[in-house]
Image (cartoon, rainbow, N blue to C red; front, top):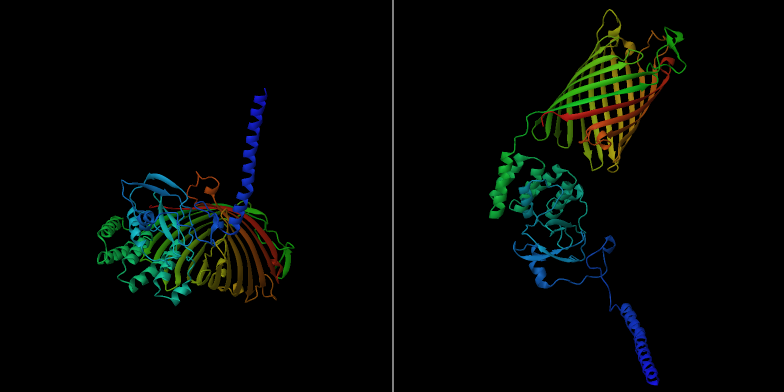
Length: 573
């Protein structure tokens, strides 16, 4: 029994002794680790996984790859033999620290032979064009230490944008027209924004400055294919084929693109479109009844007995033929028919027919649109009206956010005098109108429009002659879920002669304030299977008109609610 007790005692003493040794070592280890941290002997760095908080680190990451490995794979754009095994790099996008690649994980897998390409949102889904862009990847778009890079990860391209990829303004291009790096960055920037004209113009200028640079020609070719400019594309292809620096592989690719361009169907001479529409308007003062429901007639005050509340239903159909004239112009013919039916009164019951010819072109930075229109309106309770109109409109941009518009319009209106309306032709008139406008885009959602206008109407009977001065403001909100537009317009009408059928000693003068709000939404956003292409638009609108005049007949308030829909589609796809 004593031996057992002694043996157990020795065991307990042994355990306590070892435990005391471990406890004595822990403070020493803790002190060494604390000292290492403060003296930067030990320091952790993020390797692989990261977030946006790891940008602009104040230290350099260690080189985690061997020099041989980097030379064989990273420095050669990860091009390997088809039958060889290697490792796939799992690298977080947009992760560059002092131009070093950080490997977070190595996964053994088969890697097929790939070719380096420039990945760009503006490249179309044309297989051979994608192969062409690989050659353009050698372009030095930015400085070596801050440029955007493209790597192959799991058979897919990954973009690592550099810190030097900032927006380039057109002013910088004008100041440095021969700077190839700056111009190429500007071309790529405009291409991503969808401004193909600016991209093509920049690359064409560089092509003239550096006629021996094959990479610029290949970049230009890729943009021309996407912009669907086969004539220019074929011209650039001929220049590329005549280049002495073209490799056999690139020549084969360009030849295949040339065949595709030639095999592509020639653009249709004419394109045909149809549009349908319909809706209704609930008008709370359809007859423009005065505020006091009184009016002056032949210098006498009489009751205003016209209807106020009414609903009008309308429908319309249109056919449009459009033909391209060159690369920057088009000619259009539009024929339309509309029908209007009123519920209570019949003053708005009519059928209308129209025919319009228009030509759109560009001269310098000016977009011009001359037009000619003819129309006929069959009124149920009034004489038929024939109208002719002609004019020209134009606009030009100023910078990236501003544009100015202008226009002139001539109109001639004639009413068919008949036995039922022997005074209809008294309102036959010739009109002239000039307008100025300014559009400003604050951002992708908010924009504004401002307009000024002046018009004059010269009627057959002088009492219908008047001048009109207009001023309008509009706020446009292009939300992802709907398009909303709010407007307010002032119209000052000054008549030239007295209207003795109303009052003999006062010349009419009035001001009209029109406020409106419109909301537009595609049906496909609510019911996708009915409108998969989202080209059937629903429109809700409210309008309020306040007219103040020196004659009580024209002193009124009217408001209306409307709902309409419209859909357009191409007939010869």
